[in-house]
Image (cartoon, rainbow, N blue to C red):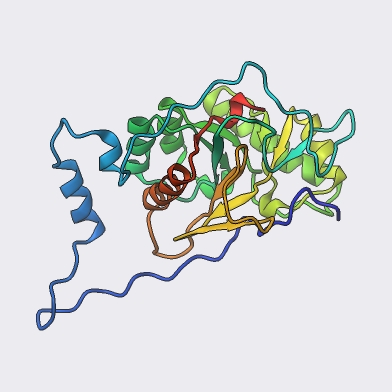
Length: 274
């Protein structure tokens, strides 16, 4: 199948956990995650928020585009009645876009991070993964996160009949409508795999763009799908779901933000560009 990008899929390799500290006979073990959180919350109230989240400078403010610059995916133009498939946005703005899949990780401190940094993030939610955890995403939405569609059951859609694909996409549209009063415009197919039937079904469910990714953030570093070793303006970044007891979502996000800053970029709101 001709796809917009070379993809690694939603279920991506995760790193290994750090070795535990020694017992009483050796050096003291480092503080656990809960202790670290307590120490952070005890920091002076006047401390700049960016420092609380491991950044050395505040995030630069992102511009708001006058018009959405999307004109279709340059790698795979969609038909006139089909939504475009994108892994980056054609823009000169020095922004990249942060996206998160599934909804398995529900760290309350990540909500604090998004709120304090005013971090524009887009969450692509799968109903069977979120389960009873929609209240967490209501809190994220209340602090500015975008909620988008990632199917009901995280099925690989490519090759499925139209009815099955439509049920997966429209079913999640209906779930998010009933819970939040919104019908998402953006859709990410599980594992990044799709076909023309997927695009037809997505269009019939009210989707205006199918969102893939150009870069993914793993436990410690970035992976580039096109052989580049730098972020470029307009890149869509997928922050990988963590399938081990590795760094927390906020720790991975902080590492990503430091890389974004080092490369002279900031974070834009994907929904403003699509």
